[in-house]
Length: 102
Image (tube, rainbow, N blue to C red):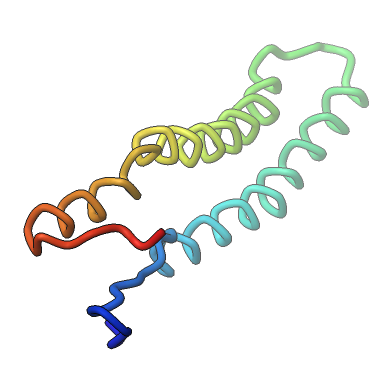
């Protein structure tokens, strides 16, 4: 809130919570290092063995699925919040009998 000629200016920002941002960074870093290493080890083991075990594909599929889940979760959250920036403005205009800054 800042005083301004003719009233008070209320401003703010909308962003992801810092804890969520930190968790996402750690999640994707973990998936890149541990999941990627596990997937590479699985590929190496599958290529070097001749039996073609179907369980060896899990070492590739699970890290890839976890990585995709992280991306989808972020995109879904952004989809749900697509109109949220408008809500506080409408609320303040209605509650405080204010007007939008042009």
